[in-house]
Image 1 (cartoon, rainbow, N blue to C red):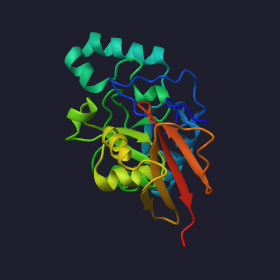
Image 2 (image 1 turned 90 degrees about the vertical axis):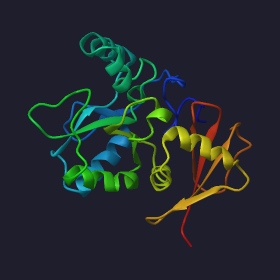
Image 3 (image 1 turned 60 degrees about the horizontal axis):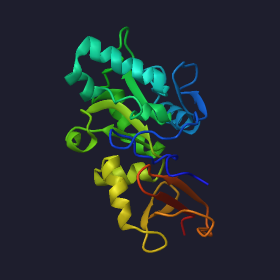
Image 4 (image 1 turned 120 degrees about the horizontal axis):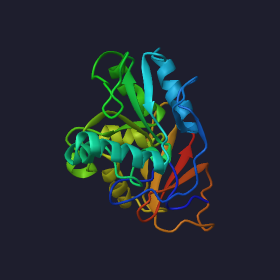
Length: 240
């Protein structure tokens, strides 16, 4: 059974710290990399980069971090760049998505890469990655125009794995994760559920505040805590 503080859809920000104490199952973000990512997210990232022929051109900069590593980055940025810069671009220790293993910072390959703000332009191979990222379960987590919602400056290099079909819904509706968690409260399980699909699958998505053995859908399903107040269910259907 998934806990409210674990799963692909947990919301992590300054108001909702990372509460899961277990280290995720990790794998190289791409083959041969020392950057680690939650294993499923790593497989999907590799698949996306292979699809557009970008392995080696788009490189992982930072993936999973321990709480101690996040604290070192925070303190180092505060000392080197000051509080204003740090609060814009570095999450508080304990409030970073990187501690979940579900977040990845990417860069266009270069001799020198800025660890805090890597270059990930809006054209070329990086644009091709953005175009297919949702098909592999990734969202651009901190888009421009959502700073007042996310509390983080626009970071075009920072991607978060949430899984399909959620990434597609968020992309199509222009929702940040904070907004998506709130939006799904309008689809309480087992009532009217949100229908999503494409690419050979269909899914129904719903929210419940109480998850237990009394919830037993007849079709394959996944459950994730939202790290706020309940659980998000994804029920998979074969297309007719």
